[in-house]
Amino acid sequence: MQPFSAVQRSHIANFALAELAYNIDIFRILTMGLPTSIGDFEPPGTQRAIVADKDGTFIVWDDAPCPPITPDQIYVKTEAVAINPSDTKMVGDFQSPYTVLGTDFAGTVVAVGSNVKHVAVGDRICGASHGMSELRPDRGAFGQYNVTIGNVWLKLPASMSTVAGASLCAGLCTAGLAIRSLGLPMPDAPVDKPFKVLVYGGSTATGTLAIQLLKL
Ligand SMILES: NC(=O)c1ccc[n+]([C@@H]2O[C@H](COP(=O)([O-])OP(=O)(O)OC[C@H]3O[C@@H](n4cnc5c(N)ncnc54)[C@H](OP(=O)(O)O)[C@@H]3O)[C@@H](O)[C@H]2O)c1
Image (cartoon, rainbow, N blue to C red; front, top):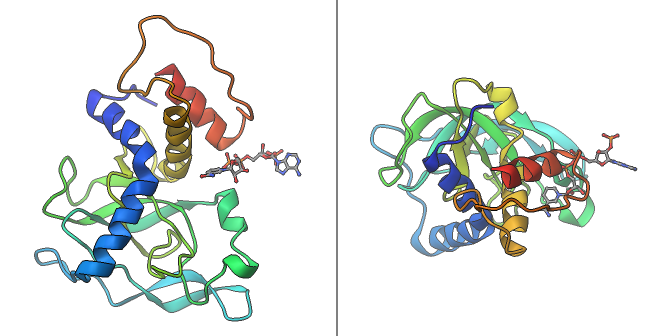
């Protein structure tokens, strides 16, 4: 992976606010309604996606809901997804029928909200979603389309494949949140004098990302 630029470092630091961004997003959509288009782009009405059926099994459904788009979001045609442990835990009481599953996605940008900077149609990005959410059944990664949440996305460099990029976002959010919660320096504020940090479970996907963030 190439070194991150200053903009990317700042963006990675913002990942720590992922949960907050999601909750603000939900509040705004519930209270202010759902915009349906950006410029000439009209999101499709339905999409093919992996959802939970009424009996608890997972099925591919061609009539799954498609997310709307707001001015601070990016609309993405999904080209790769990653499976997280959390996806495998969406069973029993955690399931909501006909709600899209999945957390991590990557793909090509098909529309950009007017408030979003540093990205254009045709760029490749990765992002993370709160799949299997009763509040937002259209917001799972495992569908043909995804929308971004707040600043929780990264433009993929030419050196990184879309498949590799799909594995980044939830892990970066989690590692960033942990680093910030522990009061450790974030990637956009490197320290002058290095010090040691123990990453317990450092060989997991999330652990390796935490190590990389700490080394920045
Ligand atoms: N709270 C959050 O926001 C959040 C976000 C992301 C992750 N997490 C949690 O962080 C942990 C790591 O997630 P990840 O995505 O980084 O996972 P991961 O890369 O898939 O790593 C999971 C690790 O657990 C090992 N493992 C699985 N079952 C095991 C067993 N029965 N006994 C011993 N080792 C076992 C796997 O070993 P093998 O490779 O040998 O199979 C693998 O090394 C998970 O518990 C996940 O739920 C939490």
